[in-house]
Image 1 (cartoon, rainbow over the protein chains, first blue to last red):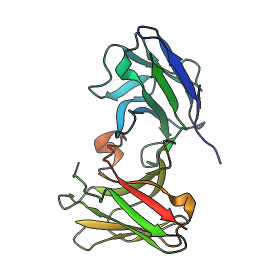
Image 2 (image 1 turned 135 degrees about the horizontal axis):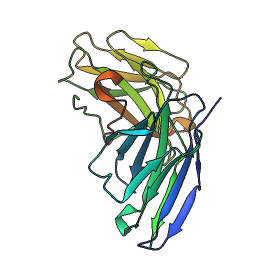
Image 3 (image 1 turned 180 degrees about the vertical axis):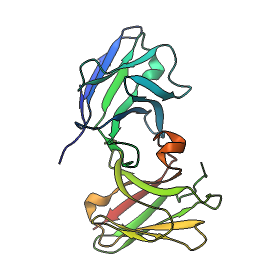
Length: 114
Length: 113
């Protein structure tokens, strides 16, 4: 069964450094999402992406965050200058199309900012 | 989107049916009930969804009351691997919401031997 993959599985970084989290959505899926989950808290929506542009973003997704689909297969989340409070699990998800709304999630990247 | 209320935790004996309730008393006519689960910090996994009719798939059954104000997810023969946090999410279709999921705290189901 096709699946969403994410790399790396774990990332440790120093505060102020840039990180790029990578996702490979299921091929032929058209809509892509990033969520995060701070330890012990709810899964929170960050951003949705379609047709090479952001469709919607949450209040969490400020100017420090950006997303990109650089090559038609990868979908990346960049945090420009990490803060301690960015430490969380980051999940990528994708759906096939409108009307096929089952979201398939990746296994997540655990980001730790020191 | 309508708010959902779920018990924070439940236990179930292995091999027995797990019945997970969800209250969504403010649900509107065009809102669906979705269930996802998250096994120990893995990515959430889709289980099932429905509008007003009961639904069944290979993982579970979804029973929605006639007034649609509550629903129950049924895992017919729970196994230890079903231990997870189960999320009931009420939302409209993609056309109105763009596909994002709004997660609550969910129900932590512990399946015990």
